[in-house]
Amino acid sequence: MISIEEKKAARLTEWTVWLKDFMDINSDVVPIPNAAELLNDYYWRLALFYLKPLLEYSEEEKEHNLHYYKIISASELTIMAVMPFKLKAAGTEESKKQANAEYAWFVATSILINWQIADNYIIDTEKLDQIVYEKEVIDVIDSETKYYPLNFMDEHIEWLKDLNTAGPLPILSNSQTWRVLFLASKADHQN
Image (cartoon, rainbow, N blue to C red):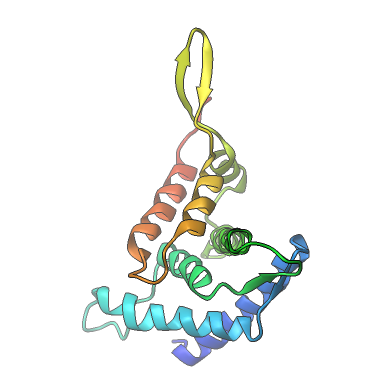
């Protein structure tokens, strides 16, 4: 069994890589000092002191591993609480939140698309893209199709950006959002 200390070290490496990879696609941001360490510390506080006590497991189990949906949710909410990126150029608080919300989405989808069970990826990225980028029809008026203005990704990023991290974080409800997204990616889609 992997110890918590080994898991913490592995996650710190992931935070470091995700920070670098995000800067490769968004040249307008720069991380705050010790960003990876701050993210890792906050994430593990959420995981160990908030999430794990909520989970039930048998006496034979030494611990209950967090499911990927909860890992994704805790990671996103960690990012929005820590705000690991600042803008290189002067910008508004709103644009800083936007960049960090985009980073949270980046990390969440990185975790999801790299999730493997028995060395097999569990998500079809083409189906996932279809779901997150599609705008749903909300009405047809006089033969004109009206679409919901935001796709899933845009709406989720907006939700993250507007999230109040000063109060209790909606880790469990957000994890269910990721669970439903995963299940939708497994469904047969017909246009």
